Image 1 (cartoon, rainbow, N blue to C red):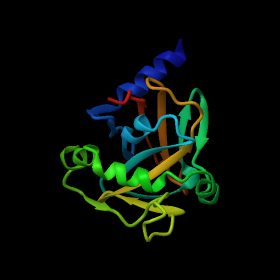
Image 2: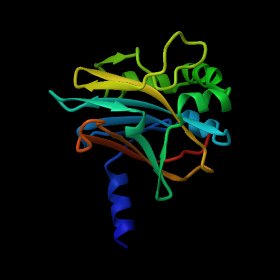
Image 3: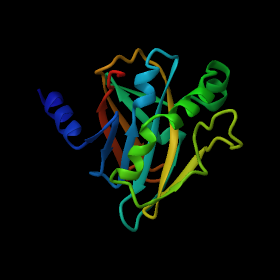
Length: 187
């Protein structure tokens, strides 16, 4: 019973912005997750979420690959190492192109993160055709939004499944952000 109450309260902190985009401002790290690509390619071996992060006013924190994870069916699932990902998944260029062509890109200018500069220079999973080195760490601040594609090995996601994405400070685990959501069905 306590688990059910906790799960409902965590989901209540998240606001649904439409088109598979969810945001949570309750923690020190404000997190917005676009689940559109995950819904569209839910049967792929690796599933992508676009994540936007913004610190509370006058705060900053470092994060790394190990401090971003999801909780799915009670288990913590971490992002794959870039080498494993590149060897086992070839859809990253398609994912980037499709994401840019979808309506999701319009949600960011009208969302609660609108008005902030976006740091486009760091990405945990840049597509193979981008001229970027995969980020091992990022510095989050209150003056700009950090964004990154995050991938997880597909544990068997289905539309309607509950997922909670967690972002923790890599040097201070008390600095945290989260966003709970249900995977939407693709339209």
